[in-house]
Image (tube, rainbow, N blue to C red; front, top):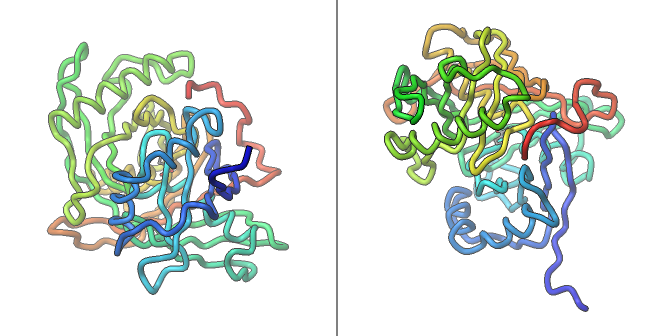
Length: 328
Ligand code: PYC
């Protein structure tokens, strides 16, 4: 049988999460900006996402990124982020995977010790600085899009718990941030199903009662991620379980979630600029984040342009569990 369609892909791995980087086969998605292209892709090309992410080529926690020509002159590549959950405005672990693949395949001009790559994402420009040794990417630092707290001390009604306090923050995606002990569920992998069910119930309730919309781009709306913070988490080190629509955990520490969490902690007066923040995933992998400046965005004062740094899939990395014991 002849193939009717051929895609080129390079699979990468960032702190527990896959990123299937699609280097060819999709063609140029119509749209004047990456946000326009994301909308076009969702409306007309979603079958490609399902084909590349779902079984049998993917799995329930699959994630990927489609390379595009940039729509702005100051960027090297455009990126569309795809997952089993949908098409994201931005993805931190995915960007680390993209930057690593661009370096290691020679798709960008590689300079050592640091190669800078400018990425046109639906949420805005993201700059990746890849540390390179003998042609191999050993770590990546991202300068993320401006992040901000949209609301602190909100409550949402979620049965059977009643009113749940939460903060809402943006770091490339919207995050509802909830203290897990308010749900009476221990932070333990043995409780993964209860944690997952609670996160999905909170997500549905937030979207029903308080659906967030980005002040500058209404295409970016809805809460598809719930950050359940473990007891004892603070503004230097935060452990969490990240529940993602339609029913999986982020095995990585979540780059956009790290930025959103830092924006929330800053808005609460707990995290200053230029201070390292250690964000730990449900499986024990880490990203280090740092707030680098404040700005104004659509009338909101925001701590903008967070750095999120992480080691990508380094063969010698001892702290990346190979088979995380979490449901997909
Ligand atoms: O790293 O930003 C991230 C991310 C979003 C969803 C899964 N990972």
